[in-house]
Length: 341
Image 1 (cartoon, helix red, strand yellow):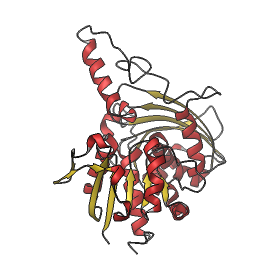
Image 2 (cartoon, one colour):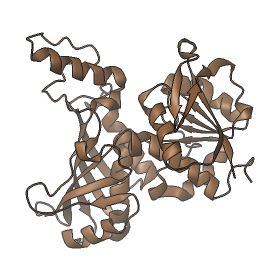
Image 3 (cartoon, rainbow, N blue to C red):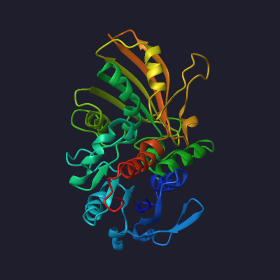
Image 4 (cartoon, one colour):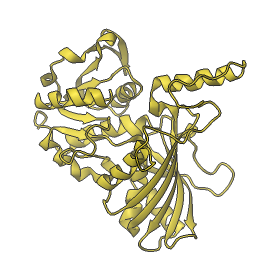
């Protein structure tokens, strides 16, 4: 069954990645409407071998679309997602605005696909934070096997997670340093080139950043509210691909060999774990891939029933665009779209 798709934020990093993934996965789109702000009206974006011209979000009739993929930030989602939903269009939103709404399901298809049915309350589905998405894909099969009690995670997040201007700042600072041009940060609080910044999003009263809070709250909502999680999120000088060092404490013993076999059989994951030079995956190698990669699996002897691992994923794909498209596929496969029924 073919459906019409509206893509809000078609000119941004995630929006363009969504168009690429819709094409790559042969999503049954009868027509795709590229939508953007007024200053981008008429701008062309690629969709496979086609070229789409961006239309004005403010004048678009969402009743013409079955699904709307939102990749334009919280302010746009807050104003326009309810309007699209009211017009009968199922919204899949990539911003953080609806994630903790109890009437909006927060979905990672490999983890909590059954929860997608709850979209009918508001006609809106939320996409999780990029760092949360890859984490819960790796945690889910381990939780099913041994029940997770506590997670400690440190993230190493690429500049693309902060948008194109942030990527440009990394490029320009890196280039400038070689010609003795002193970096002048605008997108980040400090120099990002050849540096690591332990700060993503705003600080909260308890000392954690909002990015760190998101990982905790979203993991509980998606996977299990009983899981205790603490995160430290850092921005690193890479362009694409988020990495995470993860320490997990379980209710029962699980060996690294057992975990390795469980993860190899799990959807959305690839295990590359050789205890030798280069026997692991880095962010550069995951760019353009659909999977979340797990490496460096080993028992943590400092806690009872502990396990540590490293995971990387293309944040523009699984962390955002791919997950949204997978949700749309889930709606179709389960016959949940009224117009497609």
